[in-house]
Length: 223
Image (cartoon, rainbow, N blue to C red):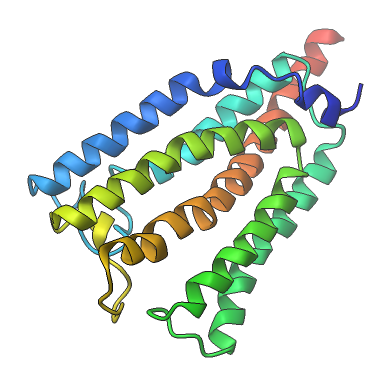
């Protein structure tokens, strides 16, 4: 049975339930910390919230490894780890290439063409990244949706509430527009494209490393 066929048999809900709940808890914790003005080092309120210690972005490699180990032990290993790494890194390269392209076309970060083109190219990298290890790709896709849809909803509430958190701030110079339009451009669109691609690709690379380690441990045991 091929990896693609085995991927259809995965118990996705069972695999992602606990990671999704942990991720939701951290999302709500971060929102609370930013609203209440807790430590900026832990809860960065700046636009994009870069390098905030409390954040779900750090969970992607952790759960990528977790899912990969579960899959390998359940007999859902990739057909070729070499191919997995190759396709994953190729899809990863699309992301910086996308940034280079939108800048080469002189699209302003605060405009609409910049995030739209970036979103389209992110979807391309996402679709390619899933093919690196289809079983793991499907799990990460499901986990990504479970992680990012709540964030998008939190952003919608934050934009209307005006709490001053990073969830409601666009890039420098972002034009003033209706709250729903603002949410679409800085919330819904990037959460369901850019961050989904990041989740699948980075999770797959970290998971493939874990799969390689698990496979090497299994070989001496089998011998």
